[in-house]
Image (cartoon, rainbow, N blue to C red; front, side):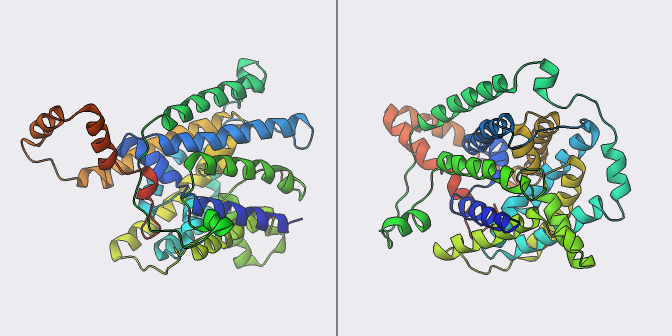
Length: 382
């Protein structure tokens, strides 16, 4: 049954690569472009998975059980991880799938991420991690504190996300000129046609649901997760202990395989050598990702996607802190590099806008603001 982890990973890597599902971009867009389209898509994954997880729990297929909330480590680790993913050019899963596209910078970030996750979880700094995560409060989930059925929270979350999706779908669509399709049928759909953000999110949510019973059947009582499997892979390479190769290790290997298949089939695979500055940022960002994820108890998948679906305090606290950390990194590394607008630009733009009709102005705004999907291009870091 361990091999099922490989197939789930292949599906996840394929879908995330073809859907350009970049969590780092989703968090960064909130600060840089004030756009929440991809953050909304991310929350679609959480909502879909939440429905499935509590249905599986109610059916007795799995049993959800949350321990005490390690608030200090979650806050510190979430901030570090959010800052790190901007430097590394992608979150943990994003780094895996972009490594499968041939980005050498992502290879470097992936190596230091897995290495430092192992250092923090089972290596020389394991004691520090344990000490930080021992600062806890007993309350662990929202529904246990509120003394309500989790299905009430599922309904609230699903309704709120549905409204947000409707808001984004009601906006004018940005269209780009594209060359004529070179593929037809299923090949065109899978490898050539751009994927809708929200449709991609639903598919990822379904994959996340499927991961629970398949992983549970092997004795690994968890859903999708990246940090611990990455740490286990490093420890296996060092010790050769076969017990470390569990369902999660097959999962992360599958993400690499699936993203490679997707990139190769769509013509997006190419070995790309980064410059020296990107190498430094990738190595440092990957290391900080490993530190932050180990402290927080998970990355953007294990915490921000899986724990949130269970309405745990750890998951939602980590999600907020990761977004804040991403905002800080964006301000220091992206937004401060923007050249100031020339004097008089604002007044000239306002005068020009006033002379246009409303439809023309709306069209101009659409042309000036590229669709968020176009920013995470396969030839660059996300």
